[in-house]
Image (cartoon, rainbow, N blue to C red; front, side):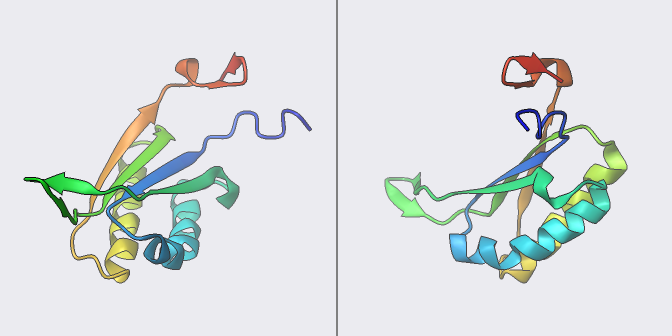
Length: 117
């Protein structure tokens, strides 16, 4: 039971510039689509909504949604499909522009407890 999550090739998404309600509204269908694209179970996904003020010239300002995907590399084609899915769902939530970037995790540098993948 302790190693139940061992060796999961997950994707964690950090979303900035969107409100929590909007993210909740797209989360189920977005993860449904990403599981099909990536070929992994839905419990490999987590979504964190970072709700912090953004400042420009001394004033709070809205930003373009910024989606950070932390994952183990799945190749350019899968990455392109995942980015397109993210864009479609964020657009459906009412945002006309989105910036998505992928941070590739290296298995030898990723540790779960004291063991790397």
